[in-house]
Image (cartoon, rainbow over all chains, first blue to last red; front, side, top):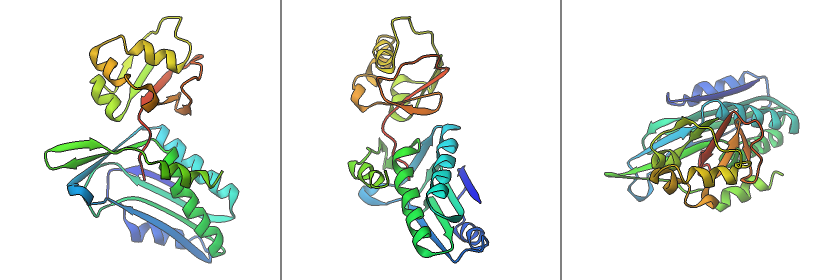
Length: 145
Length: 83
């Protein structure tokens, strides 16, 4: 019932949602993160810590299933180079009732932002810059403590 | 000890991984950062602002004052920005 994937292939939304729907739940809540095209960003590169990343995401999914009554949890994160508009992350939770699914979904993406070892590098024309962490992400994750 | 570097830490050092044998006086992550800074100009640049660094020992996040103990793998990197 837990699916975690870190892959350079595009995220297939319909496949991920359908797999959660097959859990026999009353509801599925999902969040999809897209690459922003702000400030002239032409490409985004995602670096991660192989091994630790997958372990952290599995820990997060297990923490969600122990906190809420869930029938399925999916976390898919893309790595490598992608362009604005492409999907970068998908999290989903299936539960008997909407509240568990919605809360678990918010928990997963908030915690992923601060706990999973990924780093974003933005390509802007000929230049590139590493994205800085935002304090608001820490605040969002902190509300689940 | 295997050292892993990510993002701009890796770029400044010029490699993502190296095996090093720190001296005995290096007992925690902060000591390690200070010692790494003496190894090359690239290491010095990467370690210049320890407050901007985060660390993991054997793939678990730790604070900078964490003892190295019998660490096999230590990673240094900027704050994470996934999602």
